[in-house]
Length: 227
Image (cartoon, rainbow, N blue to C red; front, side):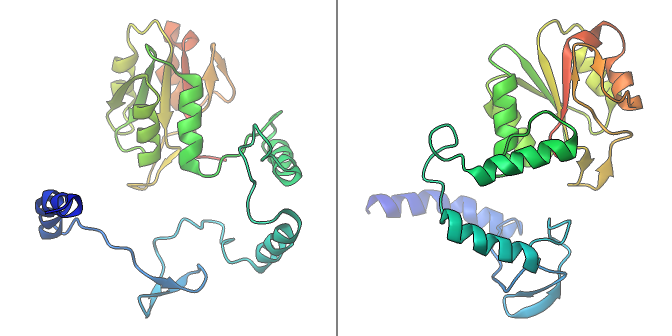
């Protein structure tokens, strides 16, 4: 038995158990562009699974702009942004996004997953703490686990549970939460804000409840899934 066969034999019981529990996932083959109706494995279906919230994935204006971009920039950046991969187009988009959001700067990531990992890694280090809603998106949970900080989860949409986790905290802590916890379609009571050194940008009720008192001067809340 070679190495591949040994690995297959090792994984087989676990895969069989997943299939028995209907937890084994397969990729469906989609033909054509994204839209409200999709050709999935040769069958026309209504699409209730898309994250194309703005309906732009198949917008012909964007497709035409992408074609022009390919002619001008090619099909790859050739390097990381900090080397020679930061193009004029990247920079223009960052400036336009910053202006749209009313911020001095914006930073592009290749995906929301990478943005969450980058933010947690930049703001936290070993010895810090990260606290997350139990039903956060998987990318937020991965970011919290991989950043090196002490990781804890609080009860879903429960500010009392979060308050208990924060009691007595004297170091740096980051609360990471979905603004819309779309795994279960639950919205927070109010929009979560970025909080630093007691400066509340919009004073939502939820944030005031969490941050009341001396805790307010030591915590950050970051809403990682809103524009």
